[in-house]
Image: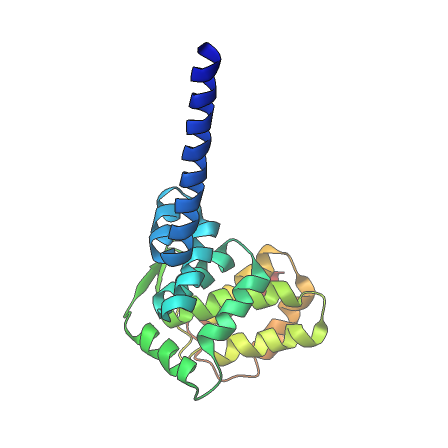
Length: 209
């Protein structure tokens, strides 16, 4: 009798586990948006970012693509982040670029907790992308120059605070990458940026390294 009860309990437990796994799989496949929020609430940011990307693939929601890129960039999953940014940013005059610009324009000002400064959403995303591209390019001199050109080209002539050049410079300084700091300094000085306080601070920072 006891063996029968134990066997029945084990079978019931097994069926329950199988059903739970099946439900989890179905929800993950059919409702990635739900799983994106659920995993985020549990502090599982990497997984939440992956579900955000799945939701973008399912629905084309740019918000989800941005979220997936930001999480990958912040977690330094650089190749994944760079791939997602390429899709997000698109080519010049492409539909993707138009959507990117529309998305950024919908945010007037965003506050970066990391830098504790007010920056535009465009500068924030392009700054993160500059950091990702720098980390991927550290073994290639040609790629390093491309990264400098990308960040400089994405920075407004007025040189506002929290711009992509600032993001890139801080990343290189934190890595104590003196060769790259010298290259970035040389490239910056080729451009006619407004020489305001933010500009001079970054120049001093790079010269210090």
